[in-house]
Image (cartoon, rainbow, N blue to C red; front, top):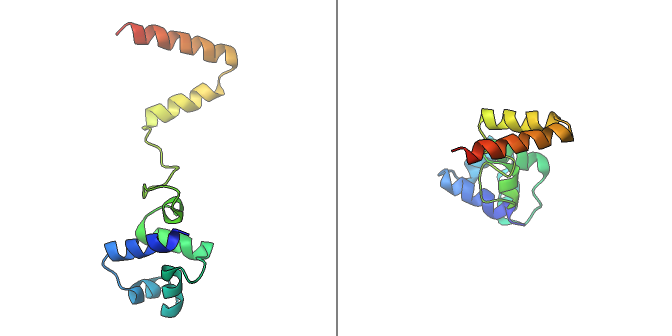
Length: 109
């Protein structure tokens, strides 16, 4: 499991000691050390608290992504999100019409 490496790196990047992190998480120091060394499986509730502490996603802690914001963080702005949500509500015929018009607008640049 990559989680123990990530939580150690997050702690070191924040210039915190294991004792300081254990106190912030209301854990016994020995138990926190076991999580960080990979000797004990990291429970979900502790992983959530660690993610909140460092402002990262559970995806990052689990090693599913190298982006601290996680897999679900969208790079779309509000207008783009609105456009996609509106498109999804259209029936198939109107989706086709919209795509045709988009092609026309794209060609008119």
